[in-house]
Image (tube, rainbow, N blue to C red; front, top):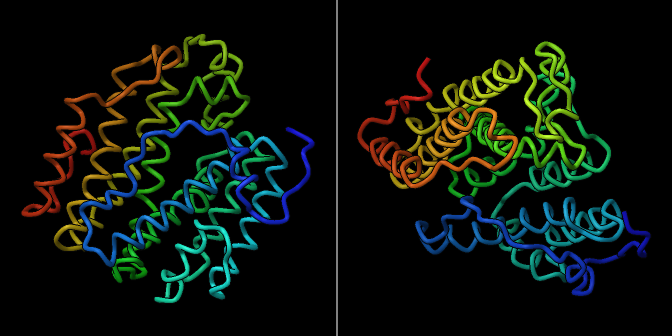
Length: 294
């Protein structure tokens, strides 16, 4: 980590220090939303992207940068933010959005600075409650669709999506000294993080990967009823997210040991299957994608 001076505010120079290559994202889908929701969705997305970049890519003191982001976040709640990303959030907070899910996302990125692995599925789920669930909550709240049941189901879908993403990045994460496969799962299958980093698949790798994929699919399947609990465009969109997660799980399963050498992608066929599942949800919202069925 650089010893560059800690930023007091998120000014242009601070953000210029990111040097981030934009990654493909499927979160916003703002073009599907009516104007009122579209502006809020883009504002929330800008926050999520900036915070993740500060936690993953910033060349200076990341914890100090995240603290500066939190100060701007609370300024946005008061209507006094200066950074453009947080200025864009001010109408979202003025409309009643709580600050808590935004603060949890900051906490997740702080946690990333000191925690490189998790002991169990329970610990990983607790991390997802900070790093993934807030995004689903923001989406539901922007649509005035948040209820306790929906938030619980959304947390499962978000965790399943994040799990699938972790398994796609298994080798890359391990090469950076980070591993999201719980330590008790690694021990059960006699797989080491150094094996994953070197691209070596020991005898227990296949069983370990199967357990990981099953964990992601279970969360996506348990969260799938969220689609049936929603209506119209939002139902189709949420079903699409979950189906995309299922397609990512399928891609990892097909890749097998080659997941340690190249990031698997759902590909055109997988994306098409996810789209069909999403569209089907409009008339048959309880029809779970085939690969998520027990």
